[in-house]
Length: 215
Image (tube, rainbow, N blue to C red):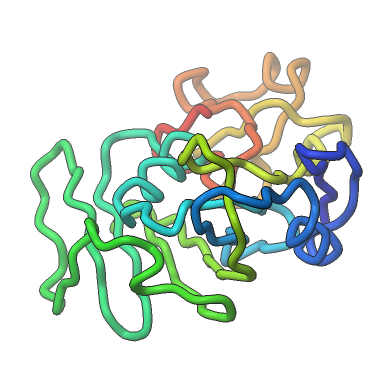
């Protein structure tokens, strides 16, 4: 379980406490309507998480782009939201791949039209080596006048130990990671038997070590 820091007051706390905290901290009184959202790695929600203030009129496509830029983008893969049984694909695949045969909604729909406080969504990036996020709408409030998505809090980087010596790991060998032995410190990486081309940096993202993601 990681802790994170509130960008408004600089207090540090774990994810569950932060979820309660950001609902009131740093809120505006007169701005346009906004949604407070938590976003977490579905496989390890206590390790990688964000809290966001999203203007209510923001299209899902723009939220997708924010998540890509901060946490996900490596090779222009397909992505989509799943909300209440319906799929909202974002057709940004640079390789020209097709989305699965699903009943689509438009990624240009504003978040306020599909999410209310208490609602949940799934966000999937890359339909091959998929990174899956859980998105929860936790509050609605007056947002700030700039009208952009704001980062309210983010987890601190998890402490990952080197598989060889137990020190702080800095890179992952994508070949050895399948056997649980791929996390390496700089010194052990220099002595590791695999080629350097297989190394990726360990970064503060649920996608570290996947595809070509380097942060």
